[in-house]
Image (cartoon, rainbow, N blue to C red; front, top):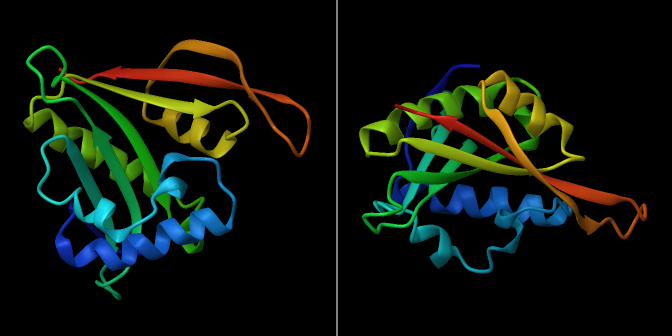
Length: 166
């Protein structure tokens, strides 16, 4: 599949809203499932604290296939660090697209002054852990028993990864 990687634009909001609604319907436990209004997504556009990048299909340029967002504080003390989140359309999961877009996003973020990227991922999210390792992120710590999975009764850890970008 041929994709275009670029910074998110206003025209992407509707497709991203649809992607996030799908995540919510799938009951995926992540921050994007908590988005309640399209205006929250619109706030990502041209926002230096929400460095957001998308993968768009060349065949269907209206459809966002993958999104990577780096959130950072804009204070002098913290603008160098971004916390990454990613979402992938179900039709293209498992094809390595999130890894490719994350690599692109990290390079773009470096141009914005970001020197470290951090990712928090739940220990039961094997696909995300594999993608993070593929990108050479370093496991930096674990929050043990972060929460309990109501459906299984098992405890889920929160794994912390980072990558120095400079």
